[in-house]
Length: 125
Image 1 (cartoon, rainbow, N blue to C red):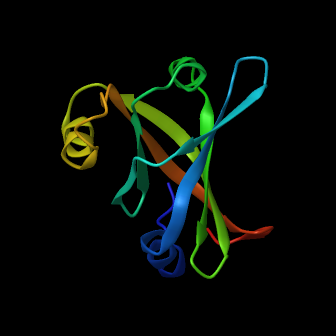
Image 2: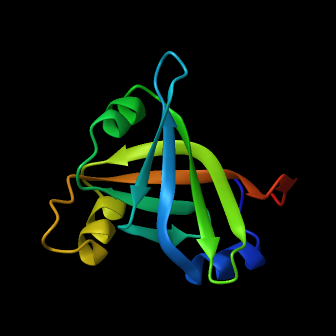
């Protein structure tokens, strides 16, 4: 697992708008969604609340790897890639329940364990 470089960790805190969360199905067909209910759990893990996943949930449960793409206020883009864990209980799930808006179901917490970090085509970690 990779630790987010300091530059990327700070950029996450200054991101604007939703992130783009991408998974793939068993046949390699990508599925990308906008996600607004997201949080940095630690320097290795980005959590996306499963409020209304369908294809995304199926892909994760089937073992999909994933990516999160975000942009900063200065229009700098970063992409994080790694394995995805799907939590319906435990500390990551309970943490998600604390920050996920109460009007959303918070069915589960999808935890992207960061293995690669990019800024454009440049690999940072």
